[in-house]
Image (cartoon, rainbow, N blue to C red; front, side):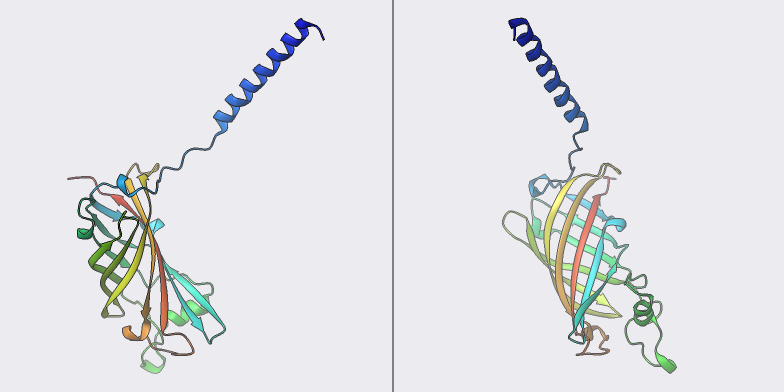
Length: 221
């Protein structure tokens, strides 16, 4: 191969690599806006994003397996104070009437009225929303997790409940442009404490709760 041919080949290869690099840059996926960095969170009032905030419940059935459902359309507010994390608070409302489950038969069982005017097995028709109002927030060093104690109201009964929460991200929502924070967590309640004792113990009294929630910062007035 002559010197001229070598130079031409090298030039073509360089142009090819340049084109591939440019194409790769053009096709690169957008960066995820959320970052798991508590130091990026700013204080203020945040409002729950109902479309992306869910509560899952899980119970055991006859000792065979667990079944579960989801409550969506969660609403409420979150007050954040990065300078004093323990002063933060949350107040959320969870619709019970529009519970999502795998079968219509189970949904009917959860929401049907009691037979012959008696008490319903579970929630009954038109149940009031559940509500959790925090009373104390104990944030771990580094701000990644917190123990949140509050009053949980369900089926007209209020009991103190402890939830474990984990910070999952913050950043600007590319759709709404609002500063957003996210959390996941879990807790356990006894449904008999809230007057829903049907089937205990063959349907477990303990109800495992898992939640995922996004909150968008409310503009300062």
